[in-house]
Image 1 (tube, rainbow, N blue to C red):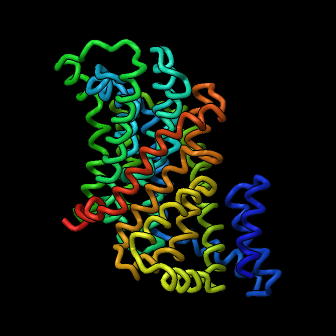
Image 2 (tube, rainbow, N blue to C red; image 1 turned 180 degrees about the vertical axis):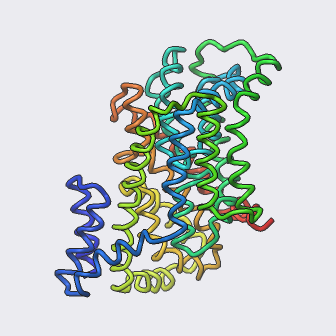
Length: 422
């Protein structure tokens, strides 16, 4: 039955079925063919998987991200980032990364970050003489910060799956996220030194102050959210509701860019995105229940612990596994499937669940801009007009840079555990 469960999933993914349908059908077929339990368990388990107060944070953070996107926040963040680093070698490429870092702390979504910032900066980079494939690859990689920098949907899902604090996971993601951003900035700078479009005039102190003043309300939002969560003022779910209210007030009343006629479309897009993610969570919950019923975590744990004596080898193998998994399976589903299997083994090697969660999430973030199913890649391709084949080659250096950071994060637990322990 174990082989049937995994083979069915692989076949359904290969024929192009959406991940939620592939997970649900593979699990349902295994229950039916193996007569594992009553078929009534299928709807019951799927409903149970999304019947969580903590999961309410996901649709609210998604709605907050769309409100900020429509409220002119992305443009103001671009202007502020441009004032900070736009005059440096590779300025626009670095602006895309810095802006994505800021926007990631608002949206919680890699795809939303890529779309909101890429729509502005990819055409601007191409107009300035950047290679279109590089511009798109740069934004696709920068967009992955949306799932590393809190608030992050994958961090919420990991916290629920691993039974750890969402607030601790949010704090743990800050330093690794900044480290990934710094590594991407360094690569963009070095790349541009060889193939540099004309440099811009440096921004004056007044320009920086003006841009900072216009963007200050956007920059304060993650401070409000994370400060409130970690200070014990409110839960992550309550923080998500506050983020929605804050983004609406800023976009509608302060910047006055959200009009009454925009609200139905914002709600529609938020509902569709939330439904996709929650559908994946529901199907992955059912799939995970079958994995547990068949005893897969115990079998894998006995096999790994019996054949691998070194924690270093285990970490390397986990990184390679998650890198491959991230290329084919969406991050939310991968977390819900593999946490029950891999976390007990990590704990047996003495690895902190917080640290292991960051290893998982950063690894899976790479899958967002690597072929064949990287969502950021397709968004950037659509904006830039670059073909997926050429764009896939252009993201290879970015993937190497991020994977090098993943290895640093994996073997330096301090980066993940220091802030949650404060």
